[in-house]
Amino acid sequence: MTLSSTFLDRIRSLARRRPSVAWRRFLALGLALLAVLTAFWPDVGHPAVVASRDLPAGVPLTASDVRLASFSGPVSGSFARVDAVVGRELSGPARAGVPLTDFDLAATPGDLASVAVKVADQGLADVVRTGDRVDVVSASAEVLAENASVRETRGQVVVLTLPRLNATRVAAMSLDHALAVTLR
Image (cartoon, rainbow, N blue to C red):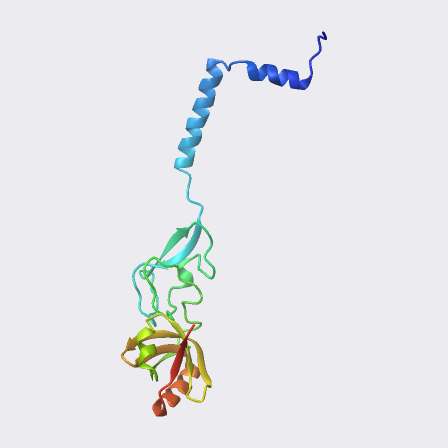
């Protein structure tokens, strides 16, 4: 038998001992303090600007229309400050509490225009809803506009919001022919 013990023997010896009352109380107090701190710890989520109420398309945003919310993960294309979206227009309708992204806002004010288009297929006109994204196609299968936002639907007529350059072309073509839209 040797009097010297190895490092493992010392750890086994400490593990067999019962912790003192003072040590157990100290550990319990530390755990209680940790629980209190985590209860009051601020949410360090990812901030994003959301609509404070349902908003229609084409509306210039005011400070009362939007608010800052925190999300558990980052929202792609979102804004972290309210002042980044105030004064800009929505390219499509927005629901309350849903994050606003660069895709939801018009690039520059006045860059978009709305056009009423008579859809060739009544069945498709019934399927298209406000907020959908569509491509506009002529009778000769020419794509007149891509990624247009549906602003409103009434029977066979669909009101689309799209870049001004494409809007004049679509409006001119819709005077002579009913146009087709393809859902994205």
